[in-house]
Image (cartoon, rainbow, N blue to C red; front, side, top):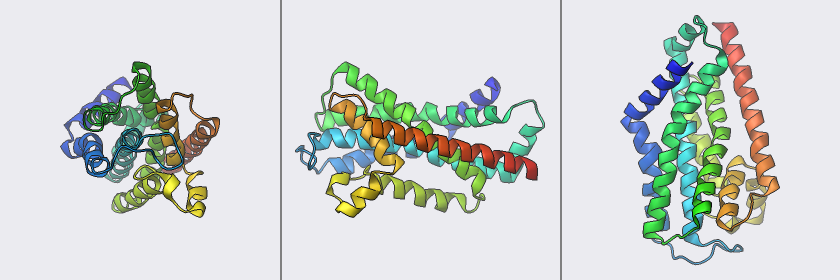
Length: 245
């Protein structure tokens, strides 16, 4: 399993397109979206616009790495027969899933850090050292929920359809969940929907840290619930795919 994890990490680091969208793309979006904004408060919160977009774009970058990377790779590897070949070895199914998550996680961390640096330099976002560390931790750990979703989509959708399907889910969750703009500016009915989305809870973890408090119980439970759901779905789809092979 260690050999496969090492292989996945090297593949991720060699994939220039994947690195661009996972590492550079969120920082570029931060400059385009947050740059023209003032640094006033997000409506109905004590969060500055700069701090909001630091959390939002760092979370968006982590989501990009684990969701887009896992879904497309797994779907294509299934079609090429790579996963079938791995089943002929002694590698357990959980080893394959863990290797995929590890490969994506390696790229996730620099994408988070770069957004932090850009936010500090361009929007004068200033946090305590413990807050930067805690923020990195909750965004990184929270991305596991979407890594599980990426694995599930990789086994659910064919190689030809996986990109458009994943993009719809990816942008839908990001925009509706409040990663591109504050959910507090949405109409009341849309805010009610956003509160139940995993991306809204994901952003809420980081926002709590920025405000100097522990993550809210509702955000933690919501994200944990989605993680269990996505992981269970991925495991079931993996077993189903195994029976077909």
